[in-house]
Image (cartoon, rainbow, N blue to C red; front, side, top):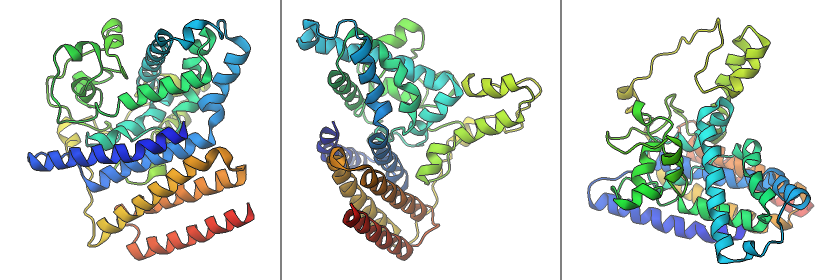
Length: 375
């Protein structure tokens, strides 16, 4: 599956350039360099983590299928209807994982990465989570029990994920009857919005009928404001992943009862134990419209683009070779790539000068060479 992802890289890039060009042509550009590179960095980071966590990505599913599948050899699964059913089953399971990802604090902490961008464009689609698989793998086990083979499960998941790429755009309006059955740009803009009426709505990945059936659907009406209610205000990729876990940990430490120290992880985001007050400011939609956008110093933009281009090529090579790497190279190269992504985030935030980033790259390349020689 990593090879398919690598083949998708240039397609994603081309479509993002088309969206950018169209936005510039009509005077409605939805891209900012710093935000787009931050989102794309999260996408690359999620792929690196996926290579390091295959037990949760596919291993536990495969084990369940081998040991407990009820109909693993049914002719249905090799037919066109079986493939379609597998895709629909994945989308249904994904709806519930996605819904829990908004309704349970620890699941939201894992999922929030995808919502942190205050822009809404095709780069936002690639802002994927890195830790959801560690929590979410049980949601798909009904497919394993039904007999959907691991390879079929993985391909069905990839199809559902790739479908969702195109619905992250502001340039496509409402689509009539299509919006009633499928996830669409209009439906998904609602999902990414922090407006009161849009919170926790429109979870469907490919089909919006799940939201209509289970009472979580709402039409797009008021102009959406994107992001999270507690803005990230950082381009650091590791902080983006960790930032939503930290408040839960702090709240658990403040909770007076041990039961509540456990509950805060699984109750709804914002739930407070008895005796604990929320001293933070109330949410203000007007304040949420003010996007985090520190200015880039002269010469930073081309260096940032070159840095990410190099990381994309290196990341693609890593994904392509990952099945054949031993654990030392698999972990070592991933950690070096993550360090380079952190360097890019520091550059965008003005904490690292271009010359220092180039020096960091030189050190990381030397370490990568040393690992390769040792391996």
